[in-house]
Image (tube, rainbow, N blue to C red):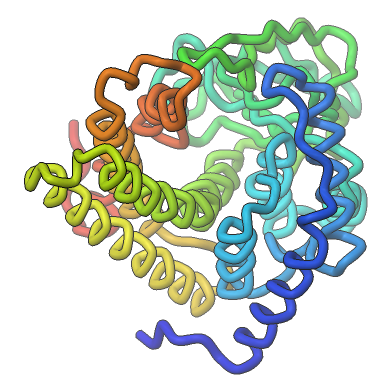
Length: 377
């Protein structure tokens, strides 16, 4: 498979680099991590800049390779992360672009691209654990609405979101993978209660969401009723495909900073540490090439990432944890100082083998869909 870039793609890279070099020095500093209304305003403001410059639609209205170049260059330049726009730009937006009707695409995609609306993800539930298809949040028809009752947990950015990509069970008698529906729920609807959750790292980007007979119009269903599991697999393929590409670039940058810090502190004299950092360098280089391969495969199959995203997600989750374990070795006694670089990153890295599908789930996908092994009983 050819992993090289075309002249047109390299021209896009050059133009993007020039724009970033011109715009980034004038950006104001970001708000406090705990100021979520401020972070929402800041992230939406950055998205509006991207929109006005013609870069807003790379996440779903451009080739996967162009998307990859965008993620690589913005991360290298230190541009603001998508932040509160994460679910809309990288999950819900691509899913609606791939599975929505013309009317749905016209309603929801432009506000995401223009930095006007924020989405959250209502998938996980307290009783479902890693088995997402075991969700219990119910939805039944009442005229031209669904009535939704249940609860969600680990709902990203729920406290500042305008919309929620919501999974509900619409046929409790169907096999568990066949009775699910994907809805777009307005977060200002009556009956919604949001309770923020604080993580080990001290942040509160997740929340519990309680739904008490919330009415969602039938027109907000993406895909057919009871076909939500297939639509969800489209969402998760984006989440496990290119959504982490920028983070690989960030990890490679951190690795270089760790090596520099080790040289300054004398830790570089430890051959075991040098071997560890060298192996991680090879690991992240390989992950970047795997990302390029997945993107090329997606381009050949119509733009939707495939099961190869699970291979990437599985290995990346563990590599990120290993990277910040190495950072703790470099920091030495300062590893417990929360004001030091990388300490909070180490705490947050613990979640990566759970977020976006646990490593156990990824092992199952790789075994069944790539290796062709029989399903477990």
